Length: 269
Length: 323
Image (cartoon, rainbow over the protein chains, first blue to last red):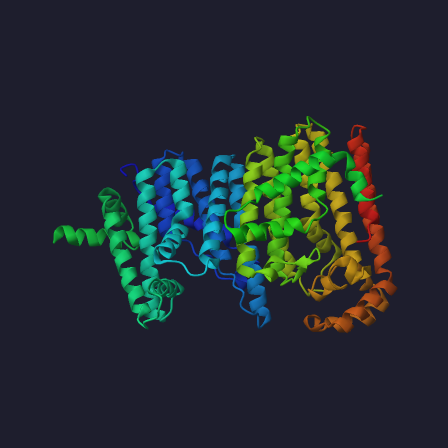
């Protein structure tokens, strides 16, 4: 990671450019500003830097990957709930179109760079992620391992696929775990604050199908499962101390700091 | 002349493309696979692959190269239809239930994204950087066009220029680049590529105007959906734009536009009658014919060969089709 000095400025710059790309004036009147995951951005920056992609190409490649992720996340907001008014109708219509628009931008960006290799990788990632989402969405009762596997895979598939393509093995494994950890913490927080989480419910259902009967304590048990997964993911990220230290020190506000500080506390006793 | 007859010379290659389409969307997940093939099985004119193949005949025609372009463009078209049905909350397409209706919106979104990704993967196999530039720019423009179509819904103040730009992005652009990319994949000269692009653009414009006319004059059976559907969805097309320039149109139609979103089937029937009486259909037909003339003119500058004759016949068919 020694090659990654002064990472904040370029990452901030990429984020600004991304924000500008996805801020279509009419779309923004009806849909929320797309969420840009800073942690994914930082991981991708590290991957492209480590693999030796020249600086002038790096920024466009990272933006393209992020656009794919943003497009997929945007389409995840589409539900089948009934529409009750015109604003809701417009919101749904434009959410579909926004996802399509972001997706078209990634292809144009890489075509302009003639990086068709990355186009191919990203199109494979989109196919794979939709296969997994279909499993998660339609495959009825699933056992706990399967539920956790699907959620974990979906969370980091795009980043992981790019990491494999670039050959950044350690970073790819680290990303897979750290993004999973982030999701687990988010879902737990969400459940505690909002009192609801689709993820917690899915785990609860999986626990019922395991025992065959509902005990009424499934949500508590689901939270225990999440805690165990958090612990496991922390351990796995801790197995890469150099990456842990680097991200923890450079991104103190992000998920990396959670993994890093835990490690630090443990080391310092 | 029927399309089938025009397609006869391409029968073998089209059948290869049909198999490739089927194979390309062979997803692992059974529902994703079924949903992806659902629209494919409903058929369609396969106009875009036909334009790719015929345009390729002007250069070094290699079916393997043509296939990558043709399959990709048809899948891009299909993916957009799957998402359009979520946007329009449509129940039926090509006489069959839409994916969002047969399953639900979420599955339609996953399926559309999956098909689109397959399409890009296909064209990624073509080693022609300029092809990717042409296609990617067109896809961005088509996306912006769709967003602007939503913006202009129920806005009867749209002008003709706005309408033409909308139909270019909605239909003509993909047909234009089908011709252009067929020529690019076959390594023709830039001059031929340009001419074929312009041919496709003009045919595409005529095609969409004809579609817009049919929405007023077609029967539910011919259209596969009730007549006047465009207006019900708030899309102001050429026949009604023309009618609004006449006194009859202004007196008869404008009052309905005070609350366009509340239009019912009786209002629609009234508006259809007024559009017909005002000459909106004849005017639109004239404009469509003008685009066709321009398309024919582009063909005149191309080398004389059977493919040129077929392109001429398809353009003519589009101008005269009644469903």
